[in-house]
Length: 410
Image 1: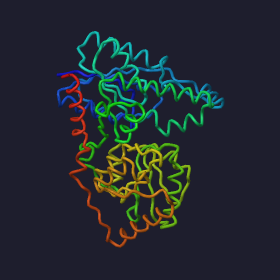
Image 2: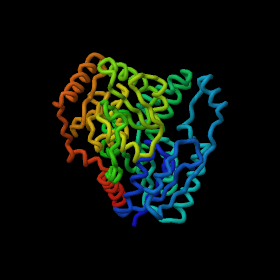
Image 3: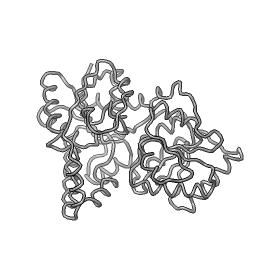
Image 4: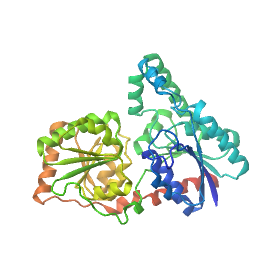
């Protein structure tokens, strides 16, 4: 069996969107002749945990968890006030997680035959570990970007808000140069959206053949033996799952207000990390529930009527991980998303919902039509299940296996 060394900061029991991709690859790669050896962050770090995810890791998987020194809250506050809030390449920089992760990876490569290194970002420090290993050991390397680095509207907003102008220009330059070097040195780049591939090709003049799109997806096993539960049996319920970026709260606020104008009895339910932020909006048509296990979230989602998706107008590349669970849930998706973005592309191809306009009046008309047909019993919804199945994780894992095999055979 071939062996692949995973450099991935987020791995169970850490939870969240950053964990899903590496966990599912680690779970299913052995079915296709690849044994993963994982280097990840220590579970003692200050981050959300979900210990139920540990049962998904195949027995016998070697996992090495590395801690790092977190910044003090006082120092973080001072940097924010002075507009000096940045690290390079990210908060887990060269002096913290990088060195112990690199040293451990080096020891593993010296004692075991490893066929390939796979690094996943963010955080982007994982690629720096892999790049140094590639330089020293001449080992094949796949760099996987779960999110853009340059061209990421959310990162750019953070720097605009928290950095003085001279530092802002300096850090943007460093990021571009570092990304360019990663793209050059890695044997293959994998990304999760088509827009991100186009962005990298345009910004770095890299051949499109070096970058492969392997989206995120859903796991069919998560949907077995799920019992449907309804929070509000006598109301139309719109469900939102998981985390939400701070920059999206205004979009949600306006959506809640508009929905209340249309029908005060429609309830929007937020479940997960995002609920803590949205709860501050204090709307009459809003219910917020803190983190639940995936099984419980699925149960409530099956008992809802619609799934809600929000994406920043500038983030055409963004396909939130929850999108794929929404596809499989089979509930109509209400997506406040760019019409020409990648999330809209998937929703349209799978016939799983509606892309709502950012223009308030147009969006009001769309929602009124959708809800009117729902109440009158004339609502038509026929998902394309054959197309949806392309996003099942075992099919996606096979795509990554093809990539691994192609690299080592050449």
